[in-house]
Amino acid sequence: MVNILWGSFILIGIIFSFFNGRIDIINNEIISSSKTALNLMMEILPLIAVWTGLMKIAEDSGLLNLIAKKLGFILRKLFPTIPESNEALGLIASNVAINMAGLGSVATPFGLKAMKELQKINPKKDTASSAMITFLVLNTSGVTIIPTTIISMRMLYNSVNPTEIIITCILATTLASIAGLLLDYFIRRKNGNN
Image 1 (tube, helix red, strand yellow):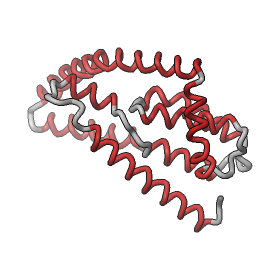
Image 2 (spheres, one colour):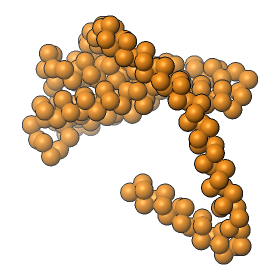
Image 3 (tube, one colour):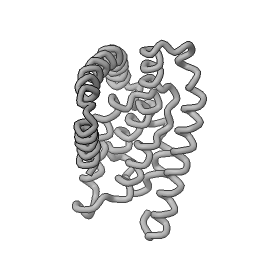
């Protein structure tokens, strides 16, 4: 659906510029956007590589498992249908911990593995379980303590103080997480799900 929407916007823009005799704007924008996207990727790629490496070290050293144990109490309350010994809880905790560091792209593999494990214990294979929905809400609205991608983009565009948004991000993502999880809880209760 999103592909159709964006494709329609692009097509409408091209048609509109063609009828207004401003096709040169489209050509210039295609070239400048490509250059901007490449520059942005080259600036952010080293940061993501460093953090991916650090997360791999944290995973291999057992730090993520330690964080998973610390988050275990909260996660067991959020996901009562997941057995305590299930690998999904550790993967969810790892995903949450990495998202807290502001590295959503690094957290994606953990999120995909967690969903795969949740699907294994899902009694209705053609329907998302309540644990899967709660994880999706938690992952989408997850608390971010250090918004590394935003900070790196602000640095790329020469912000005077690229880290000044940290408190705002913590506040916004915390409120979004609380609101999302409360809404998920009330909908599950209304539908009689755990």
